Structure formats: C-alpha cells, structure tokens
Length: 267
Image (cartoon, rainbow, N blue to C red):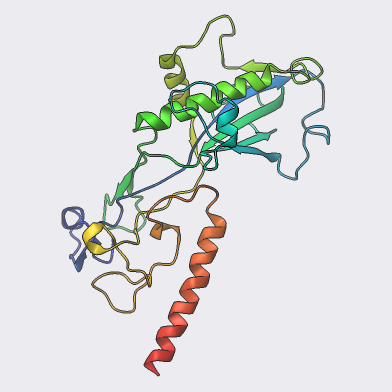
C-alpha cells in the first residue's frame, strides 16, 4: 500500500500516489481463540512431567464441530467431517491475568475457531512505514462465530468437572461464578473479554479474479504490475482450517516453481 497499490481513498488521504487501485487490506481473516483456565490443587504437577508432556506446555487435544446454537456439542458433532474447533489442553496462562503469577498450578483449555465467518480489514494511518496501520479484526462480528465459541467453552467447563481432573487433581475453575448459571449474554461478555488471536492473520491480498475483489492472479502476480508477486499468507482467499505454517510453506514452494517457469519461458 505504501508503494501506491491499494484502496484509492486510503492512499490519497495519506498523500500516496495511486499506482493501482486494488482492495489491499480488505478480507483480513484470523483464528479467534478463547480459554477456560483452572487452578490445580496438586503441588508441582503442571510444571513436571505429569501434565506437562510437551516442551512448550501445549498439547493438541482434538478437532471437533461446535454447536451453532451455542449448546454443548453432542456425539454427532465429533463425527462431523468438517470440524471448526481446534482444542488444546496446556499449562500456559493465556488471556486475562486471572491467576496470581507464580502462585498457582494452572491448566488451561484453549478453543480456537478455525472456520470463522467474521471478516476484518486494515488501512494505513500514515505514509510513514514505521507507523502501524489501523487494524480492525472484527472478531465475533458474525453471531455464528460467537455461538460456536460459546459451545466449545461450555464443553471445556464440562471437561473440567469430570474425574480425575475434579477429584485426583482437584481442578477448580477461575473467573466463573460457580453458583450462577451463565446466560448467553454472560458468555458473550466473557468471550469478548478473554479472547485472543492465534497470530494467524491472512487474506488481505486475496487471490481471486480482479472483478471479484482479488489482488493477485493464480500465478501470484499483482494485477496491474510487472514482476511483482506476493508470496505469503495474505494471498489466501479463505482462512485455512488449521495453523498457517504448512499452507504458507506450500505457497512459497509453488512460487519458486512459477518464477522458474517464467524465467525459462523468457530465455
């Protein structure tokens, strides 16, 4: 965008010469994440091998489909072939600092919404490359996203109530009034307060026909330019249903082949 490729109005208001008007910065996609955290009463358990099985404290638990109405998922949701929740059990404090640092053994159940419907955007606030752009993630803008996350977190609370977590490990939730049944409004407040991103931003230089809001073609070339390609996660027209590392690596692999083809064809 700083080079003059992007939305005309945003470029002009920052005194940047428009070289090619394209919807760069639109279609910002992200995986929202939210967690349920609990204290564990057994001393020195989450920092030792008993619960801390991996080197960084993150253990992938499962993939499953959440309930669109915000209810606890049933057996059919776990058999769905297009899951939308990536679930972790870990010993890392996430979200709000609702536990005193260094004074609690922690177990966190993290839910990541892998197929969100909400779409954000970003725009320049200055022509100075050292000034951060305005970022509008719009997480949970679509009600479906909110209810899907709500469904997953309700399941997490049920998991924490089951033995041996509730008995042998003495797990107790943090941040919930256990004497009060949470309404959908309570859940919405909790989700909006505790949610974080997965650091998976993508989609802002979408691959699609220019007439359909695309910025690059199928060979990763920016419309209206020569010898300019984009090779990163911003080209995804939709967000992958999982972590972005592998898909982005494949984009790079494909780009290397396309560049080689073009070089040979010119020779």
